[in-house]
Image 1 (tube, helix red, strand yellow):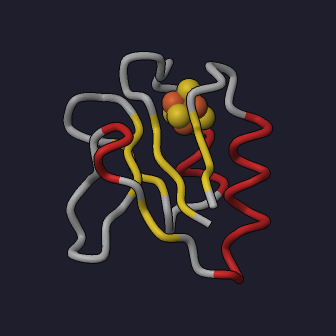
Image 2 (cartoon, helix red, strand yellow):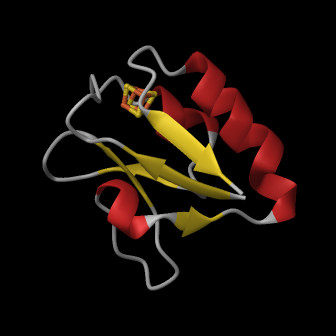
Length: 75
Ligand code: SF4
């Protein structure tokens, strides 16, 4: 499973980074990003993060709870 965030829609509440800090982080721009393997923050669909199997439930919970509906998962 891969995950990405549409930063243009993010409401910056930080729920996803609270739910799954191993996958999501708030950027200096104030909105959420996925964490990439090199430790940088991904931007949009061009920077999808591969989700470890043990993180999938947390990522799906974060997606379900995202008030802006801007977390996307793909196979
Ligand atoms: S839960 Fe959604 S709206 Fe909130 S910070 Fe994360 S991506 Fe943005």
